[in-house]
Image 1 (cartoon, one colour):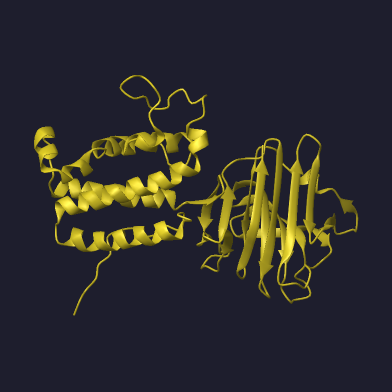
Image 2 (cartoon, helix red, strand yellow):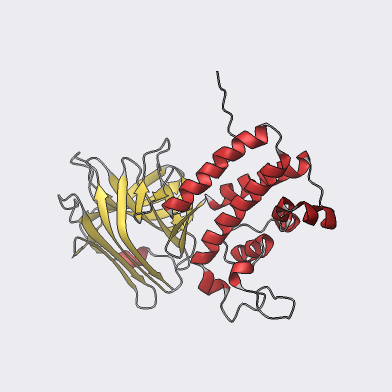
Length: 335
């Protein structure tokens, strides 16, 4: 009887290249086997190589930002010139991703990435002898820990183009077909994600929405924390009292309806377009479903301006709460 024990973190949904993800998963599965038999050298080679592959993929998305002429701390070569982007070391890429708020600023990480920057060269025995690198079980354990911590930190992100959403709950997933899946999970939020960048001037989001029957999508705005935000709800549930509306959260998992919406229900289509525009300088907050702008009324039937509900420099996001929702053809412009 074969007993398999997993020691590597395999939550790599943030890799949208399906071929790269498949290759990385094969290596992570191999790491499970070689680490358990104390294959020290192999563990270090494969673990650090996996981190370098992940870093190369993420850094390539932000190559323009990393190489921006205003980036005065971009790594230099021995001649004092900017290094070739594809020759950045593992610790240098970490520093660049940290500056972009993709990875956290943890001092111990910098030390560990620097420690392992040349360890894969141990594949050449002469290099190990000349450099005096220590390759023992402790180094293998550190390499595995660094790999798992790297994946754990990156898996908190969903990359939609160059925009970064932070996962707050559930298992939202952006696939290689560029579709965002808000899946059913164990919490009332199910899949909850928030755009890391706050709105300071303007926001424009368009997407095609697919809601299963008895599902809904909440567009979150004014996000402060999981118990303090507002949201516009697109409600596809069959119950007559479950209608499109604007709600306010007063504590975690508690929210109440503030305004009703017109139209009260989404169109009876498998998929329909949604367009959202927030323009702070011009006091605009427009929410369109299938080309029709939603209007809002209070309990007395008085019309209410959606923009009056907006707080500047707060964040936006999505969660599904009941059943699954799918967003495709997502386009985001934020300033």
